[in-house]
Amino acid sequence: MRRVIAFSVLYACSSPLPPQPWPAGSYCVLRDGERCPRATNGEFEPGQIVIDTDNGMTLDGAHGSSRQLRDDDNDGLLSIEVCCGTFEDAGEAFPRESFVVLAGGTPGGAVSCPAGFTPGSVFVDAEDTEALGDDAESHTTGIVGATTITVQRNVDLIVCESGPSLDGFEMPRANYCVFGGRGDSCPAGFARGVMTTYDEASGNTNELTGTVGGITQPGASTEFPVCCY
Image (cartoon, rainbow, N blue to C red):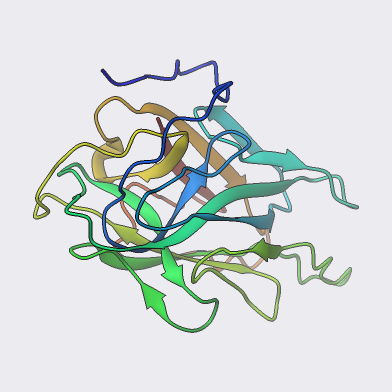
């Protein structure tokens, strides 16, 4: 039976679930709790993507370990806590539901999506380029896959979307999250939430490219639907 996290209450398990095989590929998921999920056919390594949201942010419902940090301008930083790994083929597969993971690979270099996933990118205009200048707070730490911080300190998240063409089994059972898919969909048994960043207010250049699931950019903000197990 699946363990469902209540929409309004999130917590880390007191004892970690036993490791299990993950579907083959190189990809990242969002961390939920203090530890990355464990696998029998590879290893997740932790990382952190920090976005200077300039005009603030909101975290609603299920969002895993992602959190708000303070910065010098007191307008908020979004810290997206991730776990990235490369997994050998153990006969596991992803389910048919539409959802999004962060691409594996290296920042500004190789991009890796699991077999059958479609790549895309989410460009977040995170920095203020007016007279006061950039505060250069956006950054990455640890292993974050192919996500890139630009020279202007903006953020280019490289993502991979699942789809109905994939052969489906259950999602691995562990403490983690993925981004929601098209139509605000989550894999069965996952709790829903949303992370909203209020991005650059002047000269906003946010952009969605390729296939990015349910991620949207209304006005000068970016909304990330999140699904947590």
